[in-house]
Image (cartoon, rainbow, N blue to C red; front, side, top):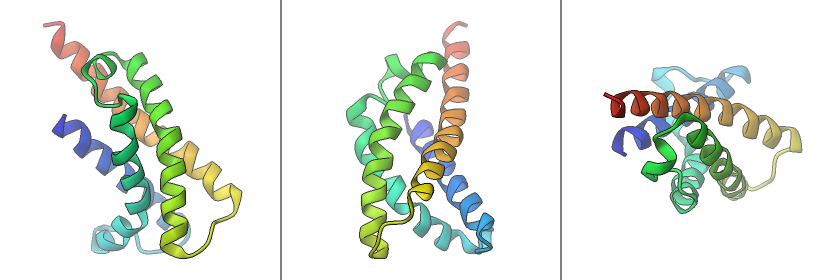
Length: 127
């Protein structure tokens, strides 16, 4: 589970770095603190909501299809929580397009990572 949580953190940091880079903001290793600050509301949202929705249960993480379904469900809750936290952090809500892009792009990155993890787990368990 530690590897899965660590990978989730990295995936959401990658998402934040890509987003920052697409807006011309610092996003490299030298800006890791700024990237972490950008990712923080969504990381918190994910780490608080996803365990409640089964995103780390062995039965959900052992098969890629189950992992992707569980990840998508948990991300729905996490993006709402993260969006509310972000609005509190920056003092305003962003345009709806921000939340749509955030939902889709982060889900692709997070789901991609988690799907690979589940595939690796399934192969490891079949030996």
